[in-house]
Amino acid sequence: MTEARSQKIDGVGLGLRWDFIDEILEQKPAIAFLEVSPENYMGRGGYYDEALERARDVWPIVTHGLTMSLGGVDPLRREYLAGLRDFIARVGSPWHSDHLCFSTHGGVVLHELLPVAFKRAEVTRIADRIKRAQDAIGRPMAIENVSFYLHPGKREMSEAEFIARVCEAADCGLMLDVNNAWVNATNFGYDVDAWMRTVPLERVVQMHVAGHDWFSETEAELVLAERPRDLAAREGLLIVDTHGSDVASEVMALLERVLVKTGPVPVLLERDQSIPPLAELVDEVRRVDEVWQRAVAAHAAARGEAHRDLAGAEIAR
Image (tube, rainbow, N blue to C red):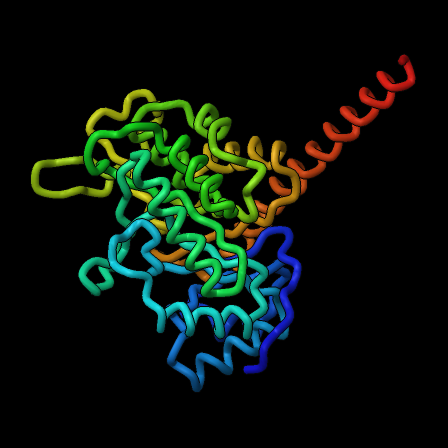
């Protein structure tokens, strides 16, 4: 695969999964862009490179990582970063995102996205790792807020403040996962709109939306449960970010409110479990795009109104 120029990422895209890769390459549905996780392709070659090159010929591609472990304590892996740099250049991603978490320890990939402590010392440490990773891959970095269910240790600040401080210290972008924000806010009982007013929306380069599921908590296990009709009456229930359902209406509504503030930031639909037929996924992309179009139009109208007000004030002077 030859190196590609960075392409403009816009509109609403879909996370590329092997479950439907042959079908999507054959049908070429109207999707704005695709997102891939480099770890699923690096070092494989053959069929995987060929399929990715075919996808690159049809859609812009953006990369989203799983194992950089920006919040970890293991040294950043030089060989992994070198391979990642080559992969990002080959697909032409204008930025690379990974999670604000730790996902490796003692050289072992944990296959989990585990939360970091929201402490002042961690801001400087993690920001330094982000800057070094950014230099190594030769692309701007964006960090993603993760869903979590327990916090390690006593907090010195809120999650939103921690994200804002890390982004500022690292001078990096924010990959805003709207579903993760809603899941955390609902599980822990705080105002997600206040959370959104604290994170640096001006640094958002891309957003994620996905589905979640409700579980009842027992001493031994989590059991899949029905979504409560009244979200206020959710005692004993836990929302888990499964990426296994359609995007909830509350998450869609939150996405629209945020897009009105940010303007035309690209949005990516993720689906990793209980993957439906491709036609259903494409239809959900269309529904997300309806929200995107409506919110972007509202953002433009608000900016136009503000510009007219400013021009009127200048004339009045």
